[in-house]
Amino acid sequence: MNSVNKTLYIPLYGKAYVSKKNIIIQDKKAVEIWEREGFDLKGKSKSKWLAYYMAIRAAIYDEWVAREIKANPQAIVLHIGCGMDSRIERVELIDTKWYDIDFPEVIEERRKYYTESDSYHMLAADMRSGVWKNHIEANQDAVIVLEGVSMYFAPDELKGLLSNLAGHFKTVKVLMDCYTEKGAKASKHKNPINDVGVTLVYGYDDPESLAKKSDLMFVQEYNMTPQKYIDELQGMEKVVFKNLFAGKIARSMYRMYEFKSI
Image (cartoon, rainbow, N blue to C red; front, side, top):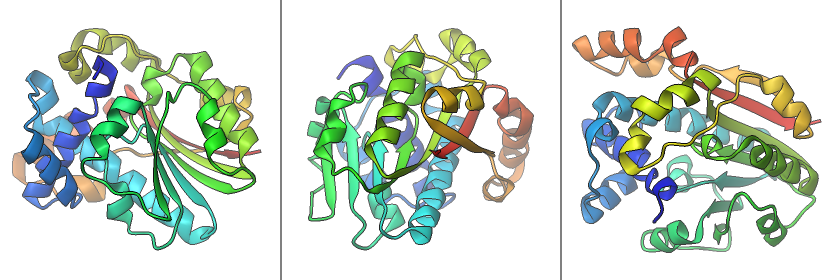
């Protein structure tokens, strides 16, 4: 795998780590994959603080997908940049058509652990290209997850992807986490993704502008460190995480935006 694809090991480790501690999320598949493959992460990539952050991020996405499908049961789900994530199992949506999408080498690895069905599909594609969407029926409502991938898209690539999705489907709801511009600059020097060889990332401070250029409407910004998840930590870990990795400090580096069709 190239360096960008190797970043999938970082959230996978985080979800396996918290699952063993029985906090934030339960992800048996992450534990299974991590223990079987034995990936070699070093430095900040194996930080427990990052593990908590990755798990909380995943939990927020899980809640959002479940809520959106409950509101619109006919919608399909697209997880763009799925890596080895098991959201399809954690959310447990019955008969919802779901597409996990990532680069071919990632999907090849993913097929060792996941099996397609009438409702679940894995799509191997260069996510930066809009061609892959033609493999999915148009004129449908789509709930779209862009978890941990926007920072690897150049601005024109991200706007093009969002615009393609908005034009292809009947309606779209999109949830996307991203670096701020400050976060992107800082990541060149002290980001866990550096440990797997990634040094070039992009940040977005203005969701209104991004939405307009992508034929979408900005809906709201989400809190990426809700107190209910911080409260699952114990003792000094809870104090340290809240003061160093949550609130205004986190928002200055990392944000989560929701968009929808105009």
